[in-house]
Length: 272
Image 1 (cartoon, rainbow, N blue to C red):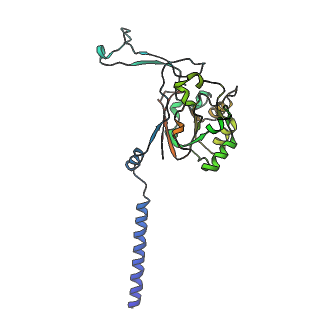
Image 2: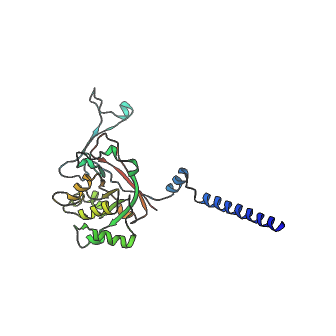
């Protein structure tokens, strides 16, 4: 009887210990709260991927430069000033595809998603960066190929589904210092095959690049394909040389223009 009691007691202790270990393990793997996640994020390094823009900012020749002037009282037509009115404001006149900007599918597709309908969850994504600068050192107008992507994957692992794929060319360095060079044509870009591979085979959510176009073909085949497949892109990115190939997160957003076909965007990376 005593032996049975000891066996029973030992069994109870073993079960209790197992429960305690399970509880402790569950607490250790408990998901972080939003406050904890925010504290972690705030301790990371942020990189601005966005250009400032002005009336002299590089823009596609078919659109023309922006104009910016003091906003005026519609009754008096006099500009608002701090001295007279206690505030001032600016009237902006520009095309949506200006500066660092978003191209929603509707930019090229009559049935495509407009910028106000792109899901919020698509505005914060894992970021992968294809550094094409070693290639363009000897092939200045190279278009990223599927072979280039596969070579990148041999070093960094497979491109994760749901990510934002960015093309680094360092063109952004000419944005302010040499705008005419920045607007050169042709320029390093994406190939259609690589675009299709990334969306169809790897399942990326969006892409971005430093140039103001996706490719340099006469039909703009890469840009046309991805927008008509209801994907979006960010053009005119900056500072991709300050972001690692993998591990960072990109946050990109823009004003919620009703049925909008494009607008200046704000993009930044959170480093691992």
